[in-house]
Length: 121
Picture 1 (cartoon, one colour):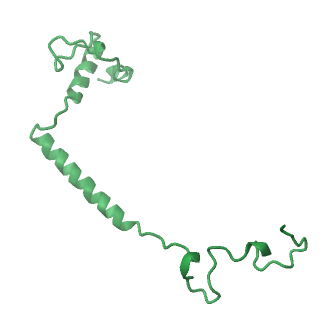
Picture 2: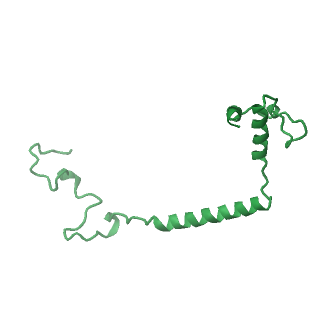
Picture 3: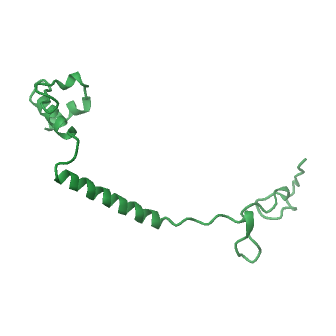
């Protein structure tokens, strides 16, 4: 059973009870870092990860730009949404010819956010 001294005179360190001991983050009296399992882990430097992330981001941007410049990107989403918004802005049924001649996009799905963009078009 843990016995507490109500006067607080038996404390070995401020803020610690005698039964708690020094704790895992304790350092020797000379201030040098401890050794073994009781030593606190070193901080991992963040800069190398940021540099690698920036390089990979730049390479992915370059790859995407070159694919877009050669008309090699396999997506038509921007064109589909542009035709849909243009139809909504002209108060017409949203016919999207990119998906097929006379294709009514409402048969695919309704996008209320795209419809809200119509006044801005």
